[in-house]
Length: 265
Image (cartoon, rainbow, N blue to C red; front, top):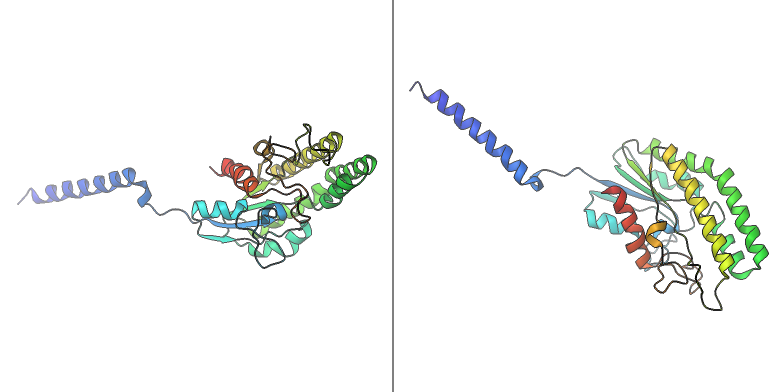
């Protein structure tokens, strides 16, 4: 009889040890932290170029990197307000409404349309070398003077709406390979200065993201060798007006998605 308290104590200790060991050996039994993911941004987030699209005017595709990442990680919730053609004002005026204190992850691509992406591409694809050069220089000047303030305001609004979320800012790829291409393609010079403009935009965006405490995911290395004029391009040329110079389905899956995975682990 006097040994029963000791036996009970030993039994309790064994049970506690077994439970602890089981938790170590079978980590999957622990409840995973909730991931409430909101994907903001412009056409490079909504998935323009990949198709097929939803019935909204935003041209959202389930082949974009955001829904692909959400599906692969079994997120708790996923909201997808990213919209083709969006500028920073659109994020501030409407897209941030999808955020809340329960949001744990936010991704965004933004700034290209503010800098006049469509006008620059149009000038270079269909205009003279001089008009292309002028358009690129104007966009680069905007990116280094006006855009930083717009990005700062956008990231601050996201932080305000989703104070508990990790913010990941994804950049834009270089659109072109500068090797020889078909006779209908843009000149090597035009493609080169457009890539240089993409580098300026990436540098500015990375700097403002870092200043905001966000993570910048550089997509340029992942698209290297797969721009327009590559043997295996992941960027659409002018086969369609809406989808021109946006990633195709491979670009989102093998370019953007790995870039996001690299910073989320």
